[in-house]
Length: 87
Image (cartoon, rainbow, N blue to C red; front, top):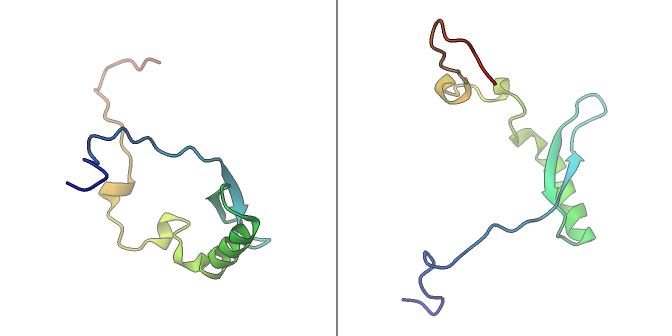
């Protein structure tokens, strides 16, 4: 066992970080991403430049993902015929 102990037994909680929405698109087409706020202004600037440089690698719609299995992206609500819906 390592000096850190058993990682499965540690009580790890996700970091809670505020997110900022940025637009890496154009004036005509909005492309919003969320980035963490716990970075320096220089890191933020560099990250935004990087994301804008690689904006074409993100899938912004299902049309951007040819060959995607519709069993993954199509949502169905199984309903029993004759049952009245309720809230």
